[in-house]
Length: 523
Image (cartoon, rainbow, N blue to C red):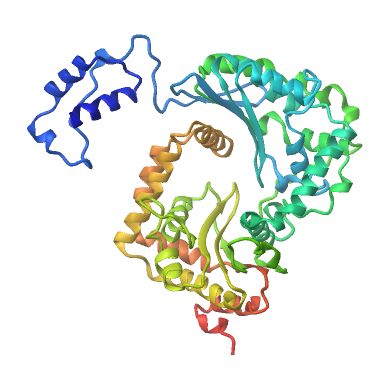
């Protein structure tokens, strides 16, 4: 009975409806005594009969297609099952391209998304249109990408694409709309420091500011004081400079490729762009696009801040936070996969993680840092990679009196990588990374984002199976090599909270340059 139930469930997952009698025939014909004794970790020796596949079913699998329109816009699709689809646009945009404009214009633009446009008189009108297709939309900006995405019923693709194209190329922005968007951004900037869960967001912003001082990736995303300088013409100017067809990818998951290309061709016609039809919307001079390569500088950002208010009435101790950053690599670099495996090997998280299989509880930041020092609240490694550079970070949170010891532990983790890692430890890191890669792609919005980012960054859809194969090839020698790349760079340092006991930057630089922790110990 257990075997019959297992086979029946596996067939349902493929949307194949068969009778109980058919299931019994499969058990009888495709299993034997050996199969019945197989452990659960071993796949059953069975094949799906071709006769069970519905006639006329579409080919499913890694069937990504990419088409470039005459205006330079790329359209990519991938097929999936289901009545609902995910569609949207990825733009090479964000705060790294704000040179010449008041900082914060990309975040303001994010808040203006899906408002009034040439074809929709108000936000209510936009969402009324979305409701007809059971659609939901979202706009998110990062340092180098702005993502407009929607999930809807497949019958509503045309109307939802119209909504997205309008918010990108045909928005109606006036002083009232801009004022409301700036108020939202201002409120978020003031509110973030008052939320414990937002500390990681702020630390990420600060470490980029320290690592890439006054250039590209280092431009601030939060805590801005230039919002009042942003005008309506600045928003249109930023759109006209950055949101051009050659810097955009339109993607669809669960749609027919040829039909989707036809829809995109109609709605993303450059002759319909609002600032092309009405140049008076633009500022007198639109700053040129900064195409310079990111320059990693290293440096520090120290914010001596009283965080006691975050603990009042909450089950959290008073903590200080430190981030150590070193120059990483771009996602186009040959060592990118090795850096990702290194991040998986270090791993980490919070002291109160639920753990369990696949949660990284055997990663070094747990086994060698968190589990051996009770006073640490969290310790985690991140790999931030962009088109031309990156920063590899290790973050720790601890009581203010222990914050320098926390920094010493982070530096120690980097220094000991010079000597390589154990084979079983490396194998576990590779397996976990492959697992995360494949399981995340089972979620349709994640699959969409992965697809459009691949096409935007590489010009093609790189298959996850290819990355899985590259992950498996990462060796101990690769880990040693990327560790040396990290140590060859100047450090970046962020201190946040009560950091009076945190060591100075010069001592950190010496400790990493001379591969000796003694420089970090205070007398």
